[in-house]
Length: 588
Image 1 (cartoon, rainbow, N blue to C red):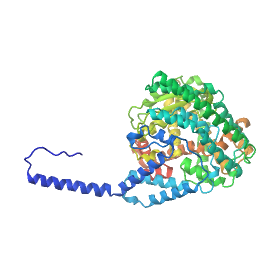
Image 2 (image 1 turned 180 degrees about the horizontal axis):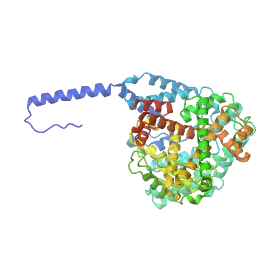
Image 3 (image 1 turned 90 degrees about the vertical axis):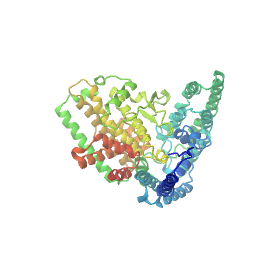
Image 4 (image 1 turned 60 degrees about the horizontal axis):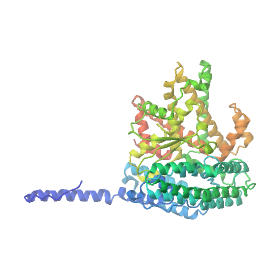
């Protein structure tokens, strides 16, 4: 509240006296409860931490902050930086942050700050648990590696201000040194006997080669041209000049950098001693447990995770058997792609927003854009993905669809529920509406994020049933989800088998054969899981955590249980590791 001095002269002294006492009381209360409070000190710490972390990487900074000047932040130098195998500095920093966090009086913090402190403490403690296994980290993989994601991240580099265009061009020019540092890291892995297998090497190099195959018609040229046009602040002549500069950097810096990466990786061919899972590397099991914590957000023992997966697998397969016994025609109906009507992505997104209304808390109208993955990247990228907007604008919300992975009508519907409503887009927007501490937008949990999207995807199958003109519509979509649940479960169990128990290709094939999966398909699944440890668990173990939390809440509340209210509690907490989320919910 702002106070303004009055121009009136005739003010009673008593009124002034009481006013001064009132203001003095407000001031003392303000300083004692905020300026000198534990909450104020904690928020000062998280603000400094956020500013340090967000300005440490130009790409992260741009995707986090659209307008630095308005946010009071200085742009970092527009370079991609380097990958370093030196970890002592990072370890010391994590220890420092962990100690700083432990110095705060937990009981004096607000509930929101307690949640943030719990999240940060667990984050830094987990980072420290990596210890000497840092060389097992792999930033290159055919589908999820940085070399596959970088073209998309740079192509979608939004132009909010003139400086963004300059920064974008400088980032492109810095790909060479960045890839050089990755090659140095890979050489250290090779020397330690930890380099990727020749099969993975070939797949990574093939992905890079596909991106640079036709330099003069590279899709980034087309996208840059359109973005400049949409930006609308440059004359045609200025646009042409920028396009020429962009093409020169692409041809003289980006393409050669990718070629050098290919050549450098191929020079290490044959040095990868292990074509199997992490368990076959020294320290591999410990590193896998680290991934479960850092990527999945679970701190449960592997054996407990495995037993929960098996229990769900048995439950789902038994339900499928009973359904097919009672209604043998369900299988053929599910295989009929025409049973679910063809809908455009826009129609699906609009219908989903209406369908979810009874089960999820309301959200202000959200704008979004749906785009398609370029053909040169279809083979290597996920079926779909969502790009989170900067935290100071909450726009743009962009969903990419990979045409090669969404050829079935029902699949597209459920995919957009995963990426859009009530999945990633909805969850991200809802959390942003809570105005969380900015550090929460940088440090999150993959298991929460992907687990939530998989959990709501399971509900979307039921929403989809209303579009099927068949008396057994709900059973058809229920069977579709059960089939997907079983597939994700099998791959999650396989992930544990390969990376923790050391299953080889033959053992994996034998396991998959139980479920009628051919040896050829089994080989592809094995290779993908070898290259992306713990990835399936982010989705499925995350889903099971939300499912179990809902079940526990239903048992606790009985008839008073409200699904929308439960979802609101989860969404308000935001992306945190599961121990933190469970602790938070127990306080409710």
